[in-house]
Image (cartoon, rainbow, N blue to C red; front, side):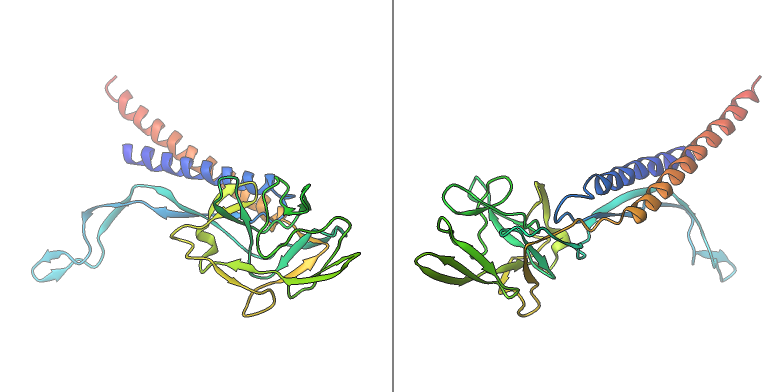
Length: 259
């Protein structure tokens, strides 16, 4: 009897984490470059009072056994790196990635991070930086005062100044398993063992995405889909709470038998 209480409690706990994940997706529906998370469940260990395939006596084999589950748990919250819709901003230093790849960013402690948020700006030194002022690497060079920047889809950059034209090419970074990247907040991700080592290449080559100047990539959160997931999580939580209530009523009936 108590097993049903514990199993239902694991279900309620898992659905609470599911709700937290859905809420975070919805909260970031307008965050540039945000990638939604999908929660994945696993069932817990089973109690087997009678195993299938056991000797039933007289040379008979038990075709099916008795297995009683112990509930569920969260296995992972996987990031889904599907393409978000591109929005035309008209800003010179807004650059979206259409396809596979990340921009490389240098954090204040000197370590590297990666982002899909291409809402870039210039600092006082003409360096291309993120909204938080962190330098964007990926081949970007300082822009002279008054310079006009043109970025092609293959990452070719032309900087027009009064003294002439300067050209160079951007690079993008990708990972074998981007879902394994560590989320740092601030639209940044960090490499770890699960993601694999970073691979650098030119935009529009060898499977890398293209660079779209004057665009930003929107969040890939689908509001309608998340609302459906929200309703499903709520109903699952309610059903598990009903299991707790039913188990409690049955225990109460057993306790009343003494009276």
